[in-house]
Amino acid sequence: MAGLDLCRPVRIARPTDRLEDVARFYRDGLGLPVIATFEVQAGYRCVTLGLPDRSSHLDFSHHEEGSDCPAPNRENLLVLYIPDAEDLTRLRDRMFQMGYEAVAPENPHWLDKAVTFEDPDGWRVVLCNTQGV
Image 1 (cartoon, rainbow, N blue to C red):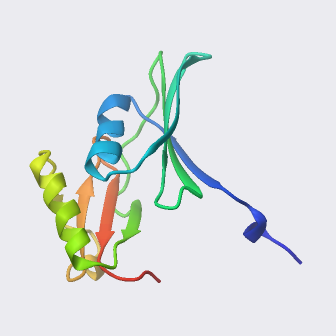
Image 2: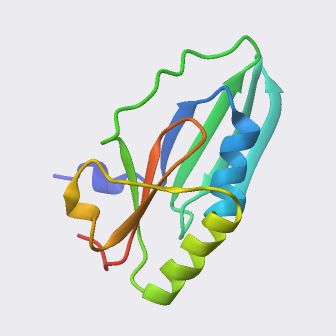
């Protein structure tokens, strides 16, 4: 029996009250391509970014009246696997040059193989130097 393996693409969506800052972090810092935007639709503005093969999307929306955007737990992670150590170093250095600082991971599992950053809303992104799971 088929399940969610038939689902393509996948979109992860969340609100933000800092749309421009969040878009800059993911677009200019992490280098994710913008694949869609809309300026005002029912009071919403939105930026959709493609994850590396564009089969999955990160979607950030902002409502003109604001959003209830509670701070996430430090274990709410977006993990990006970057198998080439030189690629990870270049990406990490670009983040540093843009003024983003690495943060200590909550879980020590990430200490020896990854670098963690917080986006402007406090959501954590782990750049992990492995092939993945």
